[in-house]
Image 1 (cartoon, rainbow, N blue to C red):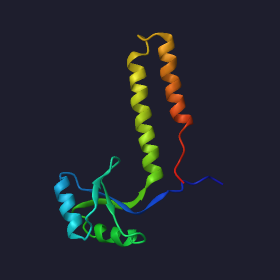
Image 2 (spheres, helix red, strand yellow):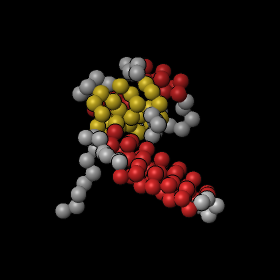
Image 3 (cartoon, rainbow, N blue to C red):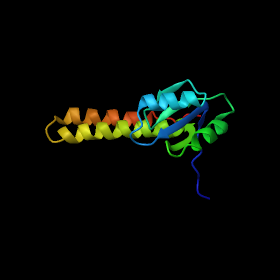
Length: 127
């Protein structure tokens, strides 16, 4: 049987991605009109909206009803975010290694690779 991805949801938080062209002020005002004050830019995509614990689905339904403004809304999956953040970090570091791979001393090149390997080995999914 194929193993499935199991998300790790943050309690009391959802992610809302607004349509392109709608800025941060619009997002804050819109969330406030729906009764949500705590809004912060999420590094992955969209905005993290704080809800009451256990009321995430209720908040999702509120936002999803405004499809002319909201591209998508879902529970905040912190495992996904952490994996994406690691992936982005590794991609940046690989690009740095590629930029100097032929011009850097062997020891420094090996040290850069070991740094990359250490990040990968030390990674753990949130529970």
